[in-house]
Length: 148
Image 1 (cartoon, rainbow, N blue to C red):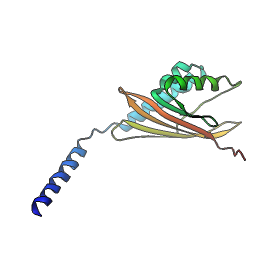
Image 2: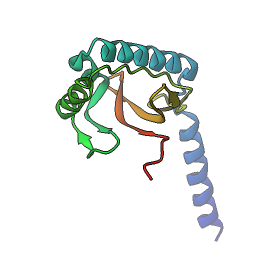
Image 3: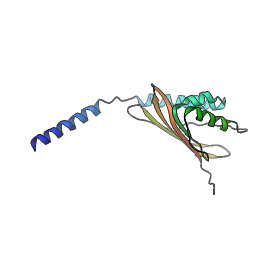
Image 4: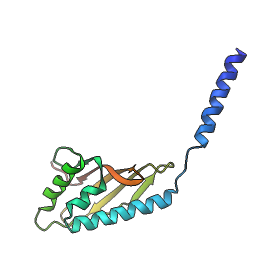
């Protein structure tokens, strides 16, 4: 019994000590980085630059637009954005109201509540580190207007 308790204690101490070795990111700096990337994304949308928009996403990133199927992969995301940007008189802007970065600095979520004259809605993004750079893993948005 004493040996089993000793082994459990050693295991628990090992787990705790390894957890204490996990790197901690400067989450405020990471938040500023994501906000800057988002600002550039909005500029790319205004310029209708689908290459720059696509490059915001990870290679296996996903885009979940309302009223349409899931779009997977950077090339497909570019095509989906190209279709959206063909809408006449489209003006799209967004800014996160909240950005949450994991303490390890490898995952971040942001969300916003947006509004414009014709519609109001919500938007959420999941960001991940890919070779040291933040990329969108997935994003989704939808309208607050009832379809009923």
